[in-house]
Amino acid sequence: MSRVPPDEYLARAYALSTTTEARTLYNEWSSLYDTDLNSAGYASPRRAVETVLKYLPTSCSQTTSTPRASEPLKILDAGCGTGLVGTYISTSTLSNKSEFTLQLDGLDLSEGMLSVAREKNVYSSLTPTDLNDPIPKPSGTYDVVICVGTLTEGHVGPNVLGEFVRVAAAETGIVVVTVHDKVWVSMGFKAEVERLEKEGRLSVLATEEFGILDGESKGGRMVVLRRA
Image (cartoon, rainbow, N blue to C red):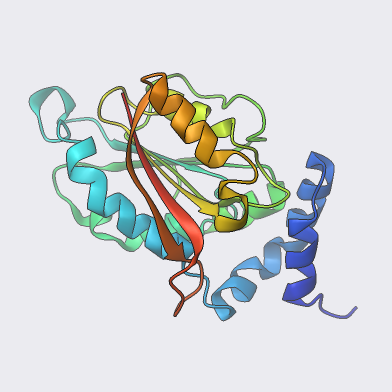
């Protein structure tokens, strides 16, 4: 059986219209996903983790205080896929800070992708989840919510931003998401951020352009929010 070209998988990904189609595609792609994206110079996971590190001090100022001293830094990787983000987190300075331990939880629609992520042994839990539905986590659970590569054509709509904010810790929790520039305005992500800000549910720390691939400076929008 011939190998499916990466461009064919990408074309199918951008044309998705149902949850069933998405699950089927990513189950098929899971064994080759890391190879294909790394070969293409996919930079979003690394750049998103660098952004978390940049904004973490202000979001988790209580991490080393007495009430939090024995608690882990809780991170939710929403749409974790094969665990590319988790791999960068596990090798970042976050994993070497002596003042706290990490609890990294992952959510993804595809069992195939989760199986690959599980083999990397960097997640505390991995749960099959459709991000178009309410996130099955209590409000205020996470110090950091990160979502990379999922807010794009044919995938998850802007309503998930409210869910990301809901499960982030009140006042200190940050949400770091990448949004494909093609859908930032057209699919309502920009409008949803503005609506949530107007309602007083979050403050906007950044909505900067960034390069999805190495060597590029455009193509994506790095959105950083703090729960109010």
